[in-house]
Length: 371
Image (cartoon, rainbow, N blue to C red; front, side):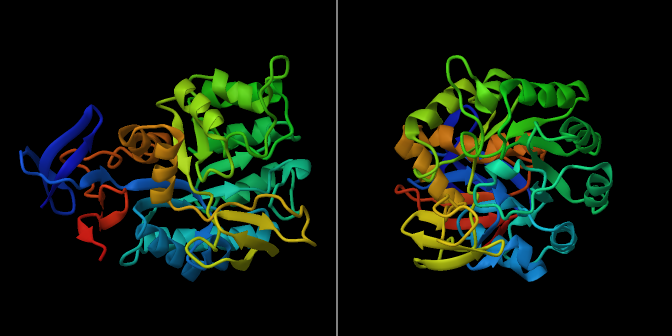
């Protein structure tokens, strides 16, 4: 049992929460204390952390899942990076192994986010130069692993519409990103996905995509204009200006989700680290490709954690209640995870305890205390 100021969809309630593996009961109380009780945070886009990376294989995935669990993430999608197909397949098989054999103190791995290789080679950002067209054979091989939950693709690339339809039929969320496309390119894929009853979104909104202006709405404009589209945001105060972030959130309060896009350097000291075979220099809260890389100076993911994303959202002007919704309830809805994302009897007891400074005090993974 834990007591505190408990997050509900309607607001905060002073309560005691009784739980085992699932939440059993919520009782209102006057002496709940000042800690915040919030549902476990869900990160749908995370490459690494604590020195580990998805592309490292099973041990790397388990390591990043343990690291991010300590920062309040109870569910995540290990995210690949643009590489030759055989390397991506090896990473997906490792995700499958971790998903099917979860270990202690690991955030739940419910699938993978396939970020690349189906990207525009002119908008790779920090992705290595292995962009490829989404051919039917490549898509089928990737889907054969059964773990792809989200795919990022550039809608203007040859075969993108057909690939989006194939992914949608397989139950995969199609997320537009790393794109030089026009609003019309984005709208075509959005319409194709929605016509099949699928789910569509945008990968790290504003970053590595065409922006919104009065006469050229770009991919950003297409995503903001479509009420059913979701949108990821990196709120490390490096990737997106607070005003831009608030514009997206106010346009899509129920469809914007916080992500980390974290690389292996998250949680480690400043220095030089590897990301997909490229060197990244980390100074403070900023990670950029090192000189000599394919796109030197480009932002290279982040060193963010989901509890840091909450604090970033509050710094941008959101209430804590709003921030928790974007970090838990919305990503749960995006992934179709009806058993988490709220503190409701019958759901998984994925629970995070925060103090008044929004620092993680305790994490429960399926009712088990992390530390």
